[in-house]
Length: 257
Ligand code: PEP
Image (cartoon, rainbow, N blue to C red; front, side, top):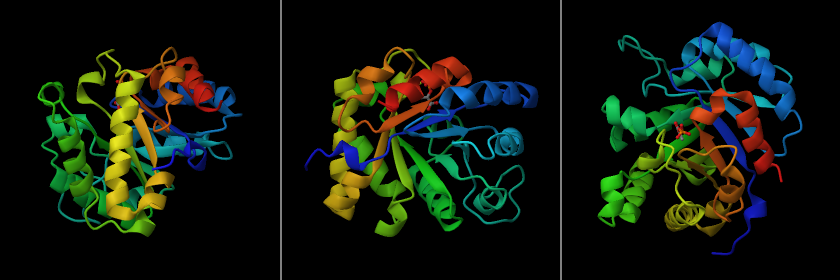
């Protein structure tokens, strides 16, 4: 596969997880807005449901896009406590994270339910940040490629080539999330490239070349530059460092070079 990174737009997305009350969210977004106003990459903040309205209104007429951190697979119904994809798109939310390792680890998420959520999100017109990645034990067993290949195939089942344009894949080695142990830039590039080859087999080379594949896992203001120079690393999904405006903005700057 040729190496045309320039065909892809870098996307830096923050994942706030279960952090920030409304007042804190407002303060963070107000601080962030001027810092990322000149970004040459796409900038997304994925926030708790309770902050979506705040984030949408504060980012109106800015270059910051808003995402949710999950959605249910049904359009509506008896699913107490859940939020559907059409509910998100109707309020103006543009992105949704699906299949984050914390959902898989703590909330029984499987590739089957991830796939259902992906399809529901696409049907509702949302852009999906689909997370895949191996556990430490799996890396040590030498099955990283098998794991991310299986996740990619199952999670994208029933997604057609046109719909793939609304998908970003985030490669997030689970051992690197929230641990301060970043993958080396070579490790990130290698797995991102492998995921791209899996997508090429499913959708063809052109679709795979156009796909944005992020790296996520303790990406920060210091290591972003090095990671983002890699040909298959088209941006980042940022947890901890997205909670501080200067740190997140530094990563956005690194992706804007
Ligand atoms: C994440 O939650 O997707 C993530 C990468 O977290 P952190 O940057 O804190 O490792």
